[in-house]
Image (cartoon, rainbow, N blue to C red; front, side, top):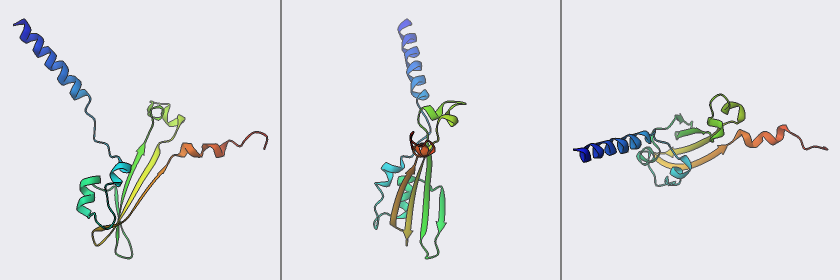
Length: 126
């Protein structure tokens, strides 16, 4: 009896640890963008690899651009009350252009506003 109670307690502990580790899925645009092939991947392929786009734009030439965006914060920027004052989140953007439902161009970019702070503080002696 005692052994089965210990086993049940152990199972509950393991289950609570595993459930506590669950979080919402995260997109990794840089890695996933490498799986999309220009001239070969279709809209269906991109949906499977990247999910629904954050924005769809119809171009004048008939092509369609899907925009994927995410904002990434480092550990310090995630601190409550202080994080926003200590830094700005990195902005990641992926543009996927389709011509006739086939990927014709992929453009990945990232901007971290913290990288531009050096402009605000000129070098001493200048």
